[in-house]
Length: 96
Image (cartoon, rainbow, N blue to C red):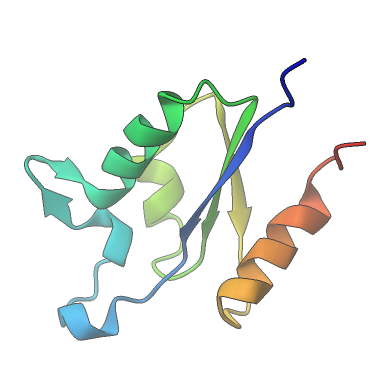
């Protein structure tokens, strides 16, 4: 029996070292946003759920990744990676 796969993509980072106001995950590489690359890789695993935790840039990330199979979770305030994962876990149905 295969266990369900839920994927969390942490997309709330500011990208301070990128010297840009654009959210880090919306920068492009090879014609696609970094977020789109992560989503494409995640979908190859045929997950039950993909959750994108976003923060910096407000609505720009959900607008860029508006797809019906995604659960978008706002991390506010942004208190680091552990907080982002906890935020996602608190908004999801636990696996039993």
